[in-house]
Length: 157
Image (cartoon, rainbow, N blue to C red; front, side, top):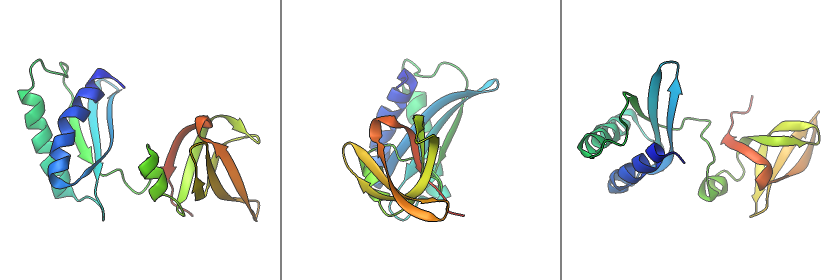
């Protein structure tokens, strides 16, 4: 985790706790010539634009008051919902995703594939188990958690 992400996480958590919001992710990335600080938040039932604006205003104030400035370069602050394809970053996220359709990217191919999509049927400390459609036949696919590069909710088409 970068020092900027660590400091922003530390500063935003108390704000979110006041409103019973959840921190999903913090990113500090350069796109083209511009830097973006993105904070993804959520709550039970979903987050709305007014709540995102509230957190953005409060976090902006906290960042402006902090000395030394944790982000010396110019950047854009974006506070938003993680969206319908929310990342699954921790154990709580995975447990909530059981029986939901997810997308998993792997570091190395498994059975010749690096991408799997299916219904998450089980989560253990070692494996995720997905029910996948393999050419019209459904099967269970166990995936070692250490092989997973990224996991997120997915929209089934």
